[in-house]
Image 1 (cartoon, rainbow, N blue to C red):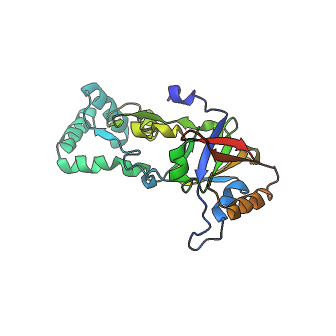
Image 2 (cartoon, rainbow, N blue to C red; image 1 turned 30 degrees about the horizontal axis):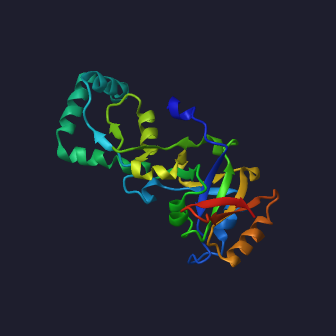
Image 3 (cartoon, rainbow, N blue to C red; image 1 turned 30 degrees about the vertical axis):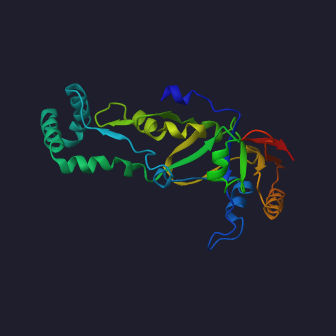
Length: 257
């Protein structure tokens, strides 16, 4: 995936957050502390994302005879069968509607793939509303010039869903493209993703990777106090900024506190 891999992220990437202080069974601000002090972000399953089309490609069962032969040749040594026999098995299987239904469940294969979503925009009104508790949460600014944040991939947007070609010779590239393409109506999110080969779980970043905490325009005073107390536990200080409602336009402005 050379074209995307060489597309370096901007200097800063951001993560919108709502507070977890009322989460059942958890300590107030537990997850907030795990990020700010513990320097750990969570890479979740794509199947839990809010877009039902996310990582849900169109499955293309077609392929040229050369592609099918190359695909069969990979399995011939292990199976002990000649290529022409494997090709017959493939054709018979694909003529069975039940087989196609099973293969169409490809999306389940990314269930345990860890994906961490970030954005290059700290001032998007809709993301403040959707991911930061209607502007009552906060937004974290990360230094995307250092690892692992520098390994983020740009998400691309289109009107049509990506296609997963069953007999594509470059399946690794195919999978990455599916994980990094979303519908055009999400373009305003300007998303970047860290896609790990490992399962879902924490993504640890160095303490200097967190640059600032941006307070939401409607954040409560008690939450500001809690965030500052949590940030005070860090070995490396972090700056505080604030998103303020613009006086004339429908937008927020990020200013120092």
